[in-house]
Amino acid sequence: MATDWLGSIVSINCGDSLGVYQGRVSAVDQVSQTISLTRPFHNGVKCLVPEVTFRAGDITELKILEIPGPGENQHFGDLHQTELGPSGVGYQVGISQNGMGKLVKKPASSSSAPQNIPKRTDVKSQDVAISPQQQQCSKSYVDRHTESLSQSKSFRRRHNSWSSSSRHPNQATPKKSGLKNGQMKNKDDECFGDDIEEIPDTDFDFEGNLALFDKAAVFEEIDTYERRSGTRSRGIPNERPTRYRHDENILESEPIVYRRITVPHNVSKEFCTDSGLVVPSVSYELHKKLLSVAEKHGLTLERRLEMTGVCASQMALTLLGGPNRLNPKNVHQRPTVALLCGPHVKGAQGISCGRHLANHDVQVILFLPNFVKMLESITNELSLFSKTQGQQVSNLKDLPTSPVDLVINCLDCPENAFLRDQPWYKAAVAWANRNRAPVLSIDPPVHEGEQGIDAKWSLALGLPLPLGERAGRIYLCDIGLPQQVFQEVGISYHSPFGCKFVIPLHSA
Image (cartoon, rainbow, N blue to C red):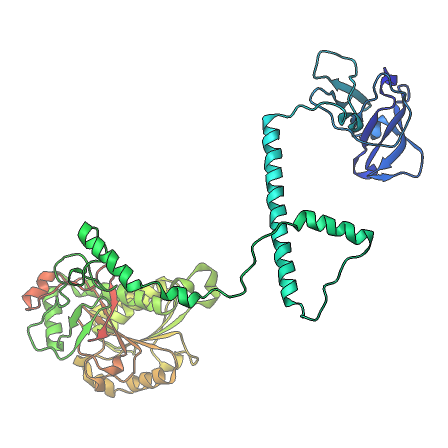
């Protein structure tokens, strides 16, 4: 059985380390499980040795490229590869359990004997049947080849024409001499010898041909046709549709009313929100009356202080950096806020704000001067503030000397104007002006002379007072006043807050 494969041309793959060998089988030893190839090729290069031998354990894959016929002598010639036809036999190598190689035949027909496979030299003398698909591919290839040949001829003729026209008149055309040149000339004539029309020497007149096109007449003809057929899309000048700008509303709706709040007295100053809603200012007397009516309806001072503290602390947290700074990863950068409060209701509002800031991991330092008797609202707020980590001081020397992140001013009150003459008040104003931190004023007074500290931001409650330039940028917070309370004091009110509790105001 092993002798049947002698003389076959095989390809042996020995893995990445040894590579691929090809050659004729010269010997097969079933006992030692070896196979020998004569005149071998290693990775496509002819080996220097005449014969190599392989063990079955070194062979990864074995392919049979050619099988000798029954009448052929098994002489070992040069290596050449043949293609197996449709009726050929395919062979592959299987690996047995003991790691040795094993040849396995997969015949396409019922015959188990090796079949005669014609060599390349024999295919020329045999009749080959060509399928319709192959005929179509051959015809397509011939057509493409003919087209390419025609283009090459055209290019060669143009090249010769341009070369002859650009040559100097006195320059003679070189002639080919000799047999070799004559052969080349005959080949050129066969490939590029067809005659074509002469290429014109004059350039194409683009401007002259463009002048022949009358655009106005063509457009007029198109417009006339569209008007007659009723398919006009551009429209007659008097029938052009209305065009809207990007900031105009194309939907028919009721006009937007930007003035939804009116007050019973003359307005000295008006503000507007980001959406353009006008918010008028109120006098201090009307504002005080508004809070009194709200307290009569159940919105007590404690509720108002809590609402003011929440809104003021929310605004302060935003000014301190919001979520970019106040997060668990920045525990080493806790912001510091200095809170300056007086012994009045406005000071109680500041203490409520400080309590909420301390609950949000803000380092709060509360300054409040010592008094023998305090308001009940201040006492209650101080009792709650003492339960936080905030620090309360009564001496200005205990305030930080370095700049803090924010200063909240609650010192001024129009009803306690005598406090501005106290030494502690003047010292607190001087400390705030020396500190380079920005200042937020909560519910500041109207007159600029009553404000000893220039603020960068000011927070108004309910409706703004006619604040001046020293109040900085004005913000308005919602303290929960019902609409009926505004109606009782003669104010036609529609909430300007929308989905927020603190909104910025701009000078109208």
